[in-house]
Image 1: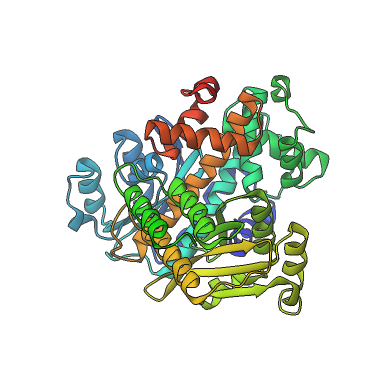
Image 2: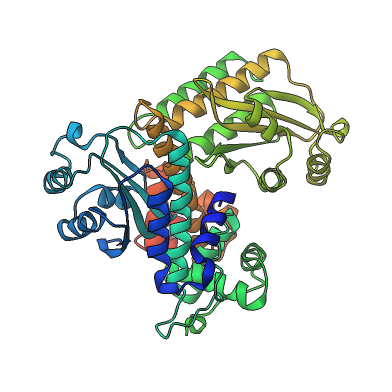
Amino acid sequence: MASGRTRQILAEVAGGGVDVAELPGALVARCAAALPITGVGLMLMTDAGPAGTVAASDGPAGALEELQFTLGEGACVDCSRTGRPVLVADLAAQGPGRWPAFTGEALAAGVAAVFALPLRVGGIRLGVLDLYREVTGPLAGSDLAEALAFADAATAVLLHLQSHTPEGETALGPQTIPVLDDRAQVHQATGMVSVQAGVSLASALLLLRARAFATGRPVADLAHDVLTRLVHFRSDDTT
Amino acid sequence: MDGPQRLAEVFVELADTLVDDFDVVEFLQMLTERAVELLGADAAGLMLADQRGALQLMCSTNQRARSLEVFEVQTSEGPCLDCFTYGAPVVNVDLARAGGRWPAFTAAAAEQGYGAAHALPLRLRGQVIGAMNLFTDAAVHLGEEEIAVGQSMADIATIGLLQERSLREQTVLSEQLQGALSTRVLVEQAKGVLAERAGIDIAQAFTLMRTYARRRNTPLTSVATSVVDGSLEARELTTS
């Protein structure tokens, strides 16, 4: 469930009429400024592994994201695979066994700790938010809460980006990034719609959100109608 | 309560699940069902705090309780939220007389037909990580011994959440809770996929997945993953 802080971050990031393509960059910059860290990277993930860097803050973050993409190893790779945060407070102390190439490069770039947060909605793998820091030690509780609020915001941004057609039009409406409605019924309906329309869970969630937006209804209401089979999606709904 | 014999059996059963192939969703679901049985309640549910401090519904034994708990989270009012906020049990709430304290919650509880509510905290070293709810149709009163059993169940739930890795520091707790909540979403999506493929309702889909997982001695999360990625077909679940 999105916190008030997540909504606030999204409002700040999308404020001032930024172009959709600039949202990820604005998000990582704001995340890097809000937390006591050296850099932030946002990596797109698929079931096969890293699919490319979406955005990175200044400093070593960009190079380290690229490195994980190239090597297929590192905090973000483990994080996406397991769906859990990977929080390494002391990279040197952990030793090179876990990520032989990544650990050495990160230490050489002056990074002492790495925190990778999964951007997932159940079976939908969207990406990973990587936080890099030049001093060792865990993220304080309040910093971790802030980092997780940014992770929720990044999840909403990645979903929002995927709802855009190649022509740059959006199915969800301009300027507001919809926060994910994290109710059980929405996830259950996502599963049903994926079968009805013959699409992935990610596309099914986007279809649900797009139709809710188009008909001016809350997603949870539409989800309820899907579950009670009042509303049905078909395979041609995707076109 | 069916006596100490049944209580011992349940604790052994719960301990048995805390081994290899541990599945947190299945474990918590089983735990709430046993809590209902042992305490003579009509429903139970479990809520966990995410790291933003917001409560999330993890599992419920039936749809009536689920509706009520979702309502409770949305309105930020009710015994479970008070239990979580203050880290103390809120038990023997006679819902016919609690309208002054929680007006919206008592009205919703009456609508679902519940007469009494109890909430027990999931505690860990001074921190509260969630709460377990119990509901009864009649306004029954739980005795001290029953409350102690309920609190033990809540404590076991805490242990279960921390089972996969030992708790060394705050960050590990965050990892566990995040993982558990993410797993819950996956199971919800799988219920929808299976319900649609098999032409059944959500509750039946959940029962099929759980039965299949138990018979094959497979974690529920693995079954949910296979349902979602299509490697496990609906007919394998319906005919097993």
